[in-house]
Amino acid sequence: MAWRFALVIDPVASDEERTDYSDTLREIDPHGPALAVGELSAQRGDGIFESLGVVDGHAQEIGPHLARLAHSAELCDLPAPNLAQWRAAVERVAREAGRGENVMKLLLSRGVEHGPAPTAWITLADAPDNTHGRTAGVSVATLDRGYALDVPARAPWLLLGAKTLSYAVNMAAIREAKRRGADDAVFVTSDGYLLEAPTASVVLRFGDRFVTPEPQAGILHGTTQLSLFAHLEGRGFDTAYETVPAGDLTRADAAWLLSSVRLAAPIRAVDGAEVPVDRAFTDELNAYLLSPRD
Image (cartoon, rainbow, N blue to C red):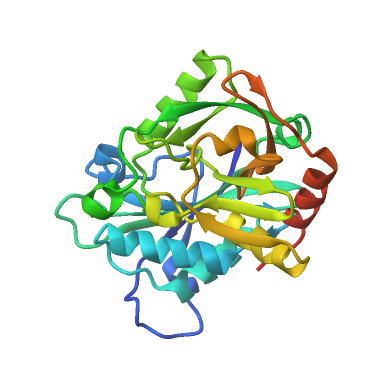
């Protein structure tokens, strides 16, 4: 990934109101040293993040991403971010993006251990080329997430609904999927229900009805999935959040992995078994997802 720009945010109180936050935003060298030795994001993964797609200089879904950042902060007992300040920072970084697709990461950590304030920064980089996945589709391996469907409600301290920096398990799952000959993984619960991919939501189509697993199952509520469902509802389709048996992944008329940067990648195989791919409809979905969305 080619890093293009980085910005440090000097946090201000969440209830501070002003119209200009420029004095709290500091450009830094994206290739230079930036974090203190005691930074807890590096030492413990103690922080949260968001990834925004940036298309032709337009940061996609800023509002939903900031709302999810605030939700993750609340779950992790981090100071509430000042969303007006973060929006100003996002808009500042977006001005550095040119034509094409880029990825912007928003990061908020607990800062230096025993330090006075959290650490916050934003990076901008060229997006990976997802053309092949969007057109040819992806194969997935289903992997046991290691907990039953009711665990998130019984053990909220596991932070299963927060987008934290602790992504070692997610990356290990992708490596395991590749060892099994697949492109990506899809998590399922130990009692047989569909969850999400390590870095994407899962959406299934049954006729004119689109379904995604319930966010209460300890998965991230995907911002791209939310936008897509609103778009589909506007076109007259039915959408639903449900408890989805893992077997529905192969019974669906079509299925996709969905994320802010990958957009809609059709699933073409599950655990080595080919499944239907609706290429024409996938092209329509990605045309919408590449359009400017606030």
